[in-house]
Image (cartoon, rainbow, N blue to C red):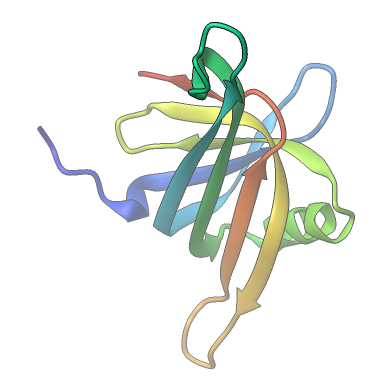
Length: 137
């Protein structure tokens, strides 16, 4: 198995059009994904007082945080606009092996950092806002 590097992960954002086009915002140097699942729990007749976790139902969420460099100033403008306007957007995370994670997300944290010597970096956290798909290459 070939090792995958964080620098090989690409973040893309949809334009919201009927036939959606995705623009590359930049690479993600650091990526953290957290999948959460809250099961549907019930108890009642026939459970003898024990809680029962229902199979296949409940709420799920995906949180992605990362940092990287933006590809150009229009990318930063687009990202900032979506964050400031609290807009849901379809996003894609493209991994080094061309697997794609995609779906609607809200930007729940956005930061920009710059030093005198280095390119401007961004940090963000995306929180799922609907069904997320993972497509293997």
